[in-house]
Amino acid sequence: MPTVPLQSGQREMEKEFMPSLSIIIVTWNSEEFIEKCLKSVFDTRGSTDLEVIVIDNASQDTTTKIIEKFKPEVRLISNQANLGYAKANNQGIEVSKGDYVLLLNPDVELKEGDVVYVPESIF
Image (cartoon, rainbow, N blue to C red; front, side, top):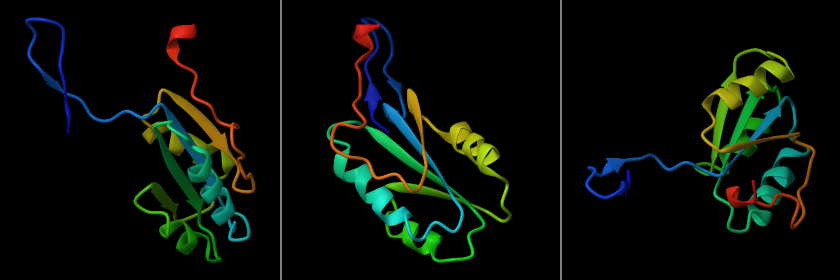
């Protein structure tokens, strides 16, 4: 883990990488859409530090095999049963590390400029 210097006189402290944005995608038999969705996320991220977490609700098709092709950039959590959309999103949010969270459906294809990181300085 990289070290982050603290203010003068303080010890250096190790800090885990924290992305600006966590993208949570819930899938269930989404083989028709998920590859295009993930490709669009990575093709349009620009300089945004992000993590992508996919929660699969026990798909019976090739959804998880498609997602595996995007590892290690995608974290896959495979449920043994379909826990529903809300619970699966909560699973993803619980393990996310980003300052902001985007819940994205697997049939969405992002275009350039759809997700733009806004610096905290404007708040």
